[in-house]
Length: 620
Image (tube, rainbow, N blue to C red; front, top):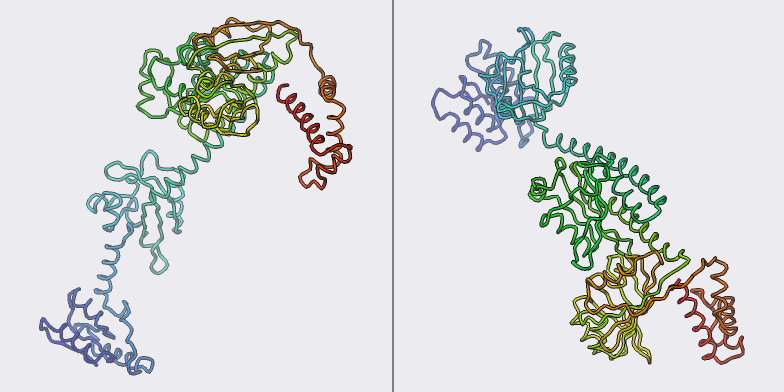
């Protein structure tokens, strides 16, 4: 059907009604040039073809359209008539649709004319203006290089120009500048437009890829930073490990760590502080900064109330690394009278603990961003643990290798001392059976308390120094408890000063400690440290004695001599029979029969032997 409406204004309404009545009928529209809205509605009404009445060959084109729409592949009744191809519009309408598509495209589109001087822009769409901030009046007639700026990569620009000169398609990502000066990443894709084999124009598509590009750059920088950190830390650990191995005493070990840290440009200062039992404060013992001499002991490292003091104190109390990275806190430190360093990016306070004994705090000042992030703090923590292990070994070695040692008997009657409090409230006696340190840095003391569990539980509840108490075993002579301490115990404090606690007992309002130190240690200093923390501290006895070095063979011989013949035989039979294997197949009755004794007698000998061996190992 050929639909040829007159110039009435409602012809499109008639066409739409006709389509509703005859939905499958092919319709060829013959009319004067409709406006854009009318043509769009006609296409939506599924016309099969369109011929402009003003065309010189209108009759022939109408005939051709009738032939086309009447072809067998379209004549089936009820078949959906396909939409009209864009090419069926006349040149004017086809151009109008394409222009609207370009104008409203969601990506920036620009067209240049290479036949004009400097290949200027001759068209930009709305998205180009939204992307760059430049309107047509600011862009038409100019080469698009006005989008470039100081950070634009010249290599990418050269690649773009080379492709244009060769009339080849190209895609690059450039740092461009918007009209307000804001930098953005622009993916530019350019292709030549040809006619009869000749390039008439270039069309370019611009897409904002800033978010993706910034993510890629950030990830690349993080990888580069991580590689730099690993290189720096590996070298630092190797150097410090060598220095620690060669350190003759604690001072040398601490000096080596601080100096090595400051030799790296990343760190401005490093110092190690020791806890003062009298005040509970951390006092700087070893200092190294890059704003004084390489080992400037007199260089100030903290103010009286700045964030450093709080971080160091908390690190010592909790046994966990503390970081100071808040800009306000760092600004406060940088503007302090005592601070002589450069730009401060962060501070790490790391407890010097190897899981057994605390030896103070290592404090590191970083002048490079990210140098004390949680990721790098993990490596610094490993360095702190290695330092603590070395100090621990040095302190213990001084005692173990000393030809002469001093044994001290110290009495404490301070009511606030935990052992005194336990003996008074749970009583009547408390004795020390050893201590271990947990992974979380808290000390666990093992005590035998001659009291009912309910009384011990009530007494512990009133002790702030004890986090929890667990009944391990009940004996006739007293019950064994495990106490988890919330603060530094006397055992840890003495160990940090190179002293070994041999025994502790509490009764009648007093606690008696037996402590061993090497003969070159100052006894008065050790006792004064305890007096600074507790009242009623008295040195009740001092014994100087020789302790010649013991070889491995001599140590084993002493262990063997400590066992009776029966105890030695009980152990030998149990070991040879596989009694200590996880899948043992021998019973206690069989072992007792092999010795020719009753089962209870056999176990008595074996347990006595095991107790001697374990005690010798733990007390070594």
